[in-house]
Length: 548
Image (cartoon, rainbow, N blue to C red; front, side, top):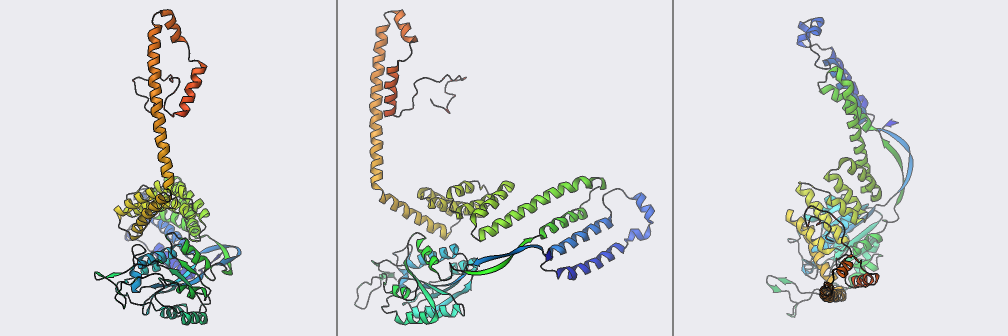
């Protein structure tokens, strides 16, 4: 065992010892006036005396100082592979990105795609810039996802809309952001502009050692753009149609990158991330596997603080301390599991995170612990278990309730239950007007329509089956009525002699009739039984749980 920050011990311990000596040797005003023997006789047993309290306080301080020095136990060195690649994202903000062939328009759809990439990326240093006639740097290369999402959210593109797309300016700005790093990956999110020759851009990217990826956010058919109440027109006065420029693919292919057309799913983002240079290979590093011991020292310090601050009669201390120890130890164990779970979650080891969060959820049984466990299940792709634990989150906290409903909607979306996803997104939006939830709601509605269009034959077959079942049921009802009439006529005939009618009542149903009845039951699935169950109840109709 050794201390990582050992400098805390001399710098904080020595002044603390001096202070302890001064406090203990200093007498109070009462002690200066009265003799100690008299004070002992007058004093009631109100708990631990002042000097013991002070001693306990400084012992607690001593263990806190040791905890600050971070005692660790080294298990040994471990070889790990760090997968940290560099990616600059260039967002096209030219006028053509106002086209509405993607919902709500190309630019907003592109921003959503970038947002999803930032959220789903692991071990990426990401930089962000925008370009039109010129280029504007939004963020340098950073692993801080929250900062990147904040910058993207606050990006005001309305004031920056430009007529053309200057791809050369985007490449120059990206080179400036990369600096001296070896692996340079540039993702351009654009509709391709109207440029026909990219030879200058290709040669510049090759000289700079950049791989260019292109995420095409435009349709091949194209759409017009309306500005100030009128459609934009070309030099001949005809309405201009803005569509995907296929030549932009040359910039990606000739630099060793990849050209991907945007889709409603996340497959396009996965293709780009998997192709990023240096992301899969990574670098081998040796790190020391350490076990932190500071929380044990904090636990001891808390015990002495308890003794120092609370008035406990001296004869009760022996019973109170074990109870406090048990509670504190339980809290420390929970803290350890939470720490391990968060580390596993951050490193995408979701199965391990599930195990750790499960322990915390069993111990805490609070909304936050269920929510964390549900998130781990969701990230592991186990959406049914995630739904189960999201539903256990019962809270009055509106923020947590919104997150729960939003994630529930995502879980049902992943399971292709779009109707349920739509309901949950709408509930989430009733709490908070969130752009992500609104976007997912619109996407779920579109996927539901698409799903319904894909399977019209299934709906027709299902309708035919329902009609067939109705016809079978009606024929069975008619047959039952005929049997009932025949039974009435049989009883009338049998009423001539009492002896024969009594035999008829006592005789059980024949095997032939039973077989015929069962065949009819199989053909017509009715809720009837051959023999009435011998259930005794105080009133008729009490057995509502079992209608048969």
